[in-house]
Structure formats: structure tokens, C-alpha cells
Image (cartoon, rainbow, N blue to C red; front, side, top):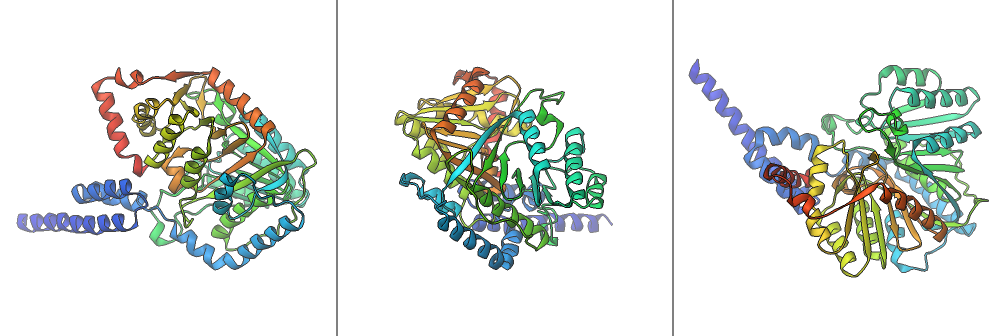
Length: 477
């Protein structure tokens, strides 16, 4: 009996190591970065018992299911995109940027900059959700809702009540949420929504037997569209903590933007691609772009994700950083940059750009908090300044470039946003709007302290070891 048990265990060991070798080859062949491929390959070869299940859950960098689904629906979606491009050009809403620095963004977005837009900065949860609920009440045809996190708390129920009331008035409501980000959302919330006519679904990153344990992909987009006339994009989710009521994090610092004008249709285009993946259908929507009566801001919408042919988000950030001439201010809730972004930040500081990066002092993810310390020395020594926000929890994602360009959206300066998450950002080229963002960031800086190299060097050996280990896992985060 003992011999059979020994044989059984030896067979398990051999199988694990064989599968580890196969998975390591897969990681090398399919990895999007050398660092990530090396990290996975070493783990799979030397620690297959732990690394194999982790690789199956977190290892993929390409959302093939979404790619296949999009291909089957590309004809309809591409026709909508082509028709939208024609309408933008016919109505003189398509405005090619005279600054060739941003031609790259148009290529990445596969859409042009549009003019005749208005962008209203909404600072923190109270202002954001007051505005969202107000505009929901004005809907005359349909409402598109998409959030990473939705909870069945006071705010979540209030949103549902507003949507149910609009459905009763004959308004169509399409509602997407991320199944991982909203894992605490009970079935009762979903059933009640569907019973009252809301078309609601999670993003289905685990759909299909090959994806059952694929927990790495997240749809991190936060979008609201009203009748194809107004859209919201930003960092806030549907949870009481985003109103600053969380007992641990307290004050919650975040930003959303209300958009009016032709760019609304570009936000809508991102939503229907996700909706098609979930439902294999494209709802009838308003694709007639209209000029905003409130402003004439030039703007471009940039969705990105693991189904893209290129690493859209990472390329965009590197290009944006490289485009800065005298100022580059960045606010991000997670700071785990790859080597390309580190080099771009160093180059910006070395050529005399005022580089300021604001990151949170409090963090909800210990590994990313520790990882951020490992980048301090190599970035600070080139002249860049890093600040930690202390008033509460900093969750906003924003970037200010020189005196004219502002970027706001859902993407952080980390590997997950660059390569794994579905994100959406907007780039606005307007001096007045940039001045508003500058004022907002100056207020953030007034509630932050500057970090020095000594902030890391004065720490204990064990803290430094934890930081270095966390950095080793940065390509996997």
C-alpha cells in the first residue's frame, strides 16, 4: 500500500513539473513583456504546485474570447463606426489636431479629435452622483450604465430606483457591471432590476469553459450615457464609500467628467463593443452627433483593453509623457509603472519638465503600495517630485500636460491598466479646462507631502525586502 502511495505522489510531482514546463513555454511565447514572461517562467519551472493554478487564473494577457466575439460582430459595429466617422466629417466635427504630437492618439483611438464639445469637471462623489441622477431624470429614449463596482447599499439602491422609474416611463436602460469588481452584489439586486425592466448583466470575463477561472481580466470602465447627448467618464463607482462614508478610508478623493457634444458618440461606441460581447446584440442608439451649446473644446475618447492589437493604454501614456515640454502632473491611485514609463518619466524630468506625481498614502492593495516604494529612488533622482496624498483615500486618475492638455478617465499608471483591464480615457486640449484641472491638482497637492529618497532608505531591512519582493511581482499585477 505504501509503495502505491509513493508511486501516486511521484506521479503527481512529475505531472506538475511537466505541466509547469508546458505553461512556462506558453508564458514565454505569449507574454506581452519580457519581465512578465520571465517572472511566470521562473515561477512555473521552480514552483509549479503554486504557480500553475495562479497562471491559469492570472496569467493570460489577451482576452481571446472578447476578440472572437468582436470579430463575429465586427461588421455591424464597424459599420456604425464608419457611419459615425462620416457624420463627424460631414458636420465638421472632426478636427485634425494641428499639433502632430497627438496624431498618435488618433491612430490608437481609430477616431479623430472632435470639436464643439463641453467638459464639466465633477470633483468627488457628491457632485458626480447629483449630476448623474439629475441627467438620468431628463432621459427621453435610453440610458447606458457601466461601472466596475456596484454595491447593494444606499447609493446602489438609489441608482436602481432612478433607473426603474425611467423604465416605467418607457425609457430603455442597458446596465453593465464587472463580475469581479461587483462580486459582493447580491442576486436580489439583479433580479429586482430585471423584474422592473432594466437590461442588466455582468461583463462575463469568465464565460466559456476555458475562461472559468480567468479572474485576471476586469472591465474597469465607468460610463453613463443619456440619449447619446451626454456622457460621464471618470473614476467613481457605485458604492457609499465613493461618497466618503467608508469607516476605513473616510474622505474619498475622485473625479468624473460630464461630456456634451460629438465625443458622446465615441463613448457610446465603447459601450456597445462591451454590450456585444455580453449579449451578441447591438441596441438601437442615437448616432447623430450634435454640437454642445456650452463650449467648443477639442477632445478625443480612448478606450483600451486586452483585446486590442496593440498595448493601447501603455503606448498612450508613454507618448503623453514624452509630449510634455514644461509641465507633467499626474495623479494615480496605483503607481506600478513598467520600464518604458519609468524611462519616459526620467527623460521628462531630465529635459527640465516639472514632473509631479501624486499617489495615495492609504492603499487598499498592500502589494501595489509596497511596489510604489521601489520606484522612488530612480524617479526622484532625475528631478521628478513624488507626493503622497493624506487627506483621505486618493482614487482619481488624471494627467495635466503643459498648459493645454488634460487627461481624465479610468486608467492608473500600473501594469493592470496598461495591459489587463478594459479602460477608457479622454484627452481634452483646452486651456480653460486645463486651468480647472490645474486648480484641482493644486488643491490635491495642498493635502499631500513630498516624498524623499530617505522615505525608503530609513525603513527597516524587512520593509525593504518586502518592497523588493513586491516589485518582482509587479509584472504579474
